[in-house]
Image (tube, rainbow over all chains, first blue to last red):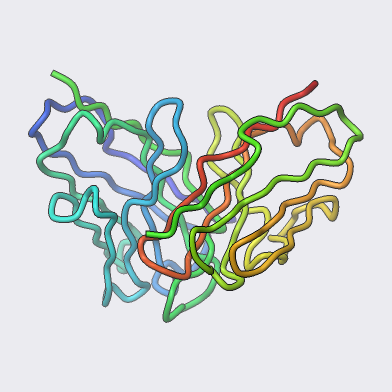
Length: 123
Length: 107
């Protein structure tokens, strides 16, 4: 079955950097778009970034544009999120999520999510 | 960006009752509206996509309707495991956005 396992979270100082990974299994990773979504403590869901199935396209939330970079390695079935210039307001659980549809040319709903990894930005 | 406004913020009902959750978009999202359920400490789960399509394994008591800017998630007869937070999401336009959530609590 589908498994998405995030890793790389932790405590980082404001202005610091951190890289997250999402290891995927149980489906053909290279044929599905992938997203990062975050949830600040006690708050709702905020979409962060998207990468197309073949890595040909990326989109970002305005709040992270220029600071976060999404990437993927289809040979390793792994999704990444590189974060720099971190701020207190980036503190959240970060989820990776898989798109429902194969090789979508737009986007499709998120049918599987990982359990998330907590990023805390604090001095 | 498209703002999704969910109402009510909190809904207090008893098992067996019918739940009706609303999501209103600041501009048309056509039919590209999904609903997710999230329980404490868990990842969200896809319930309904493209307004009215149930995701795999979702019970028939969950249904979605609407179009354009006004959408509804209905749970026909609440089971104990349905008490959770529900989010709507649009994907017609970047950035993808979520509503602020409706908390469905036991009365």
